[in-house]
Amino acid sequence: MMKLLKFLIVTFILLGGIGYGVYHFGTKIASEKLVSTISTELENSGELENIKKTIESDPQLKSFVEEAKTADNSKLPFTTKEEATKVLIKKVGISELNDIRVQVQKGTISKEEIIQEMEGKLTDEEIMALKVIAYKELYK
Image 1 (cartoon, rainbow, N blue to C red):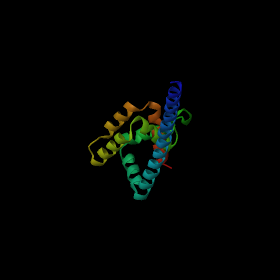
Image 2 (cartoon, rainbow, N blue to C red):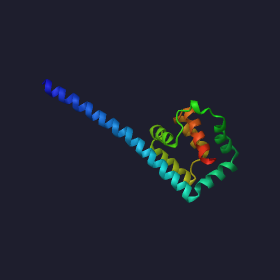
Image 3 (cartoon, rainbow, N blue to C red):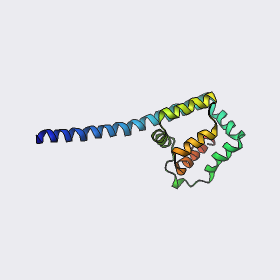
Image 4 (cartoon, helix red, strand yellow):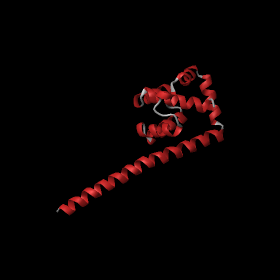
């Protein structure tokens, strides 16, 4: 009886450790691949310039992104695209991010709705960190 109990406990601990490792490293690998793919796509297609022009022509979006100029980088929860993607995947989810992307492409969601949705799922510091990263990417 004791051997069976020890076997079950060891098995449970091993499976828990493997599950955590797969989740942790799987999320990291997925976020790095996602960032790499999207960055390459945006740069190669010229879409990055279109995004920049859209932000420049919209005063509300421009002021939203330019708040990043005065941000204190030492107080931000993350500073890289990969870390940002990992946080977005954890807090928002891949399927919901994809749904937002599809809605944006179709024009069925407004920027206010997106901002409101993100403000409901992310902290103020995380949103500021996203602004900083977006500002750096757009104006590098």
